[in-house]
Length: 124
Image 1: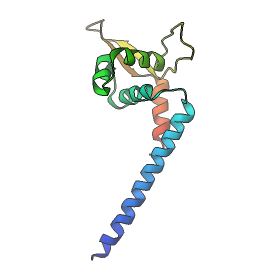
Image 2: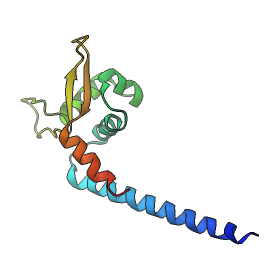
Image 3: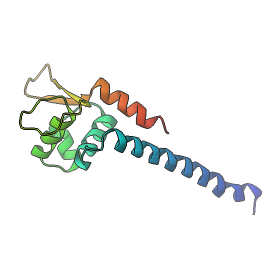
């Protein structure tokens, strides 16, 4: 057996451990900062963070969620004020209107959302 073959698993394991520790730290940060965020809201937030501006339909299709569920998640993640809401909105995403078709609205990270992504990915 080649001596380098023996060190490969060890180095690979070290890399994996470092990545897992980074992920664990990011998840802990995520949970500590936004413990009130539901798993569906997390999924929507991560989709927008990874892919950039998306329409509600894009989000619903990519995450296999219903339109009303996406709308509720986006409303909670954005700064949209809903009078009957018991909790404060998170302000992590913002909505923008397509200049060519005012019926289309895009969900994108707000400044606060971008800062949050940078904070949790700093562990990687």
